[in-house]
Image (cartoon, rainbow, N blue to C red; front, side):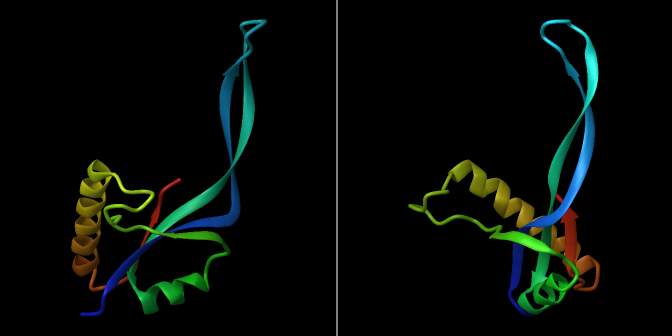
Length: 106
């Protein structure tokens, strides 16, 4: 089986979310809009991920992987969660006949 990879992509597409804000002076609620970039996580082989890139306008891409001890982003407790998440993704990937996975993460 080919090696599996996981990446987080920040997309150029923007989502507008509405939420309520409270005015500190008048103590009244009012609706507001927040623009957020979509973020997705993709999981599959390098070739599958390359194919998926054609369908998205990617602004930034980050590898989602277990960090090596001594790296800037290393946190032992985060690595435990990341390792379990990658195992879960692999299980789902195999269950779905090795089709690449796309998850909306934000």
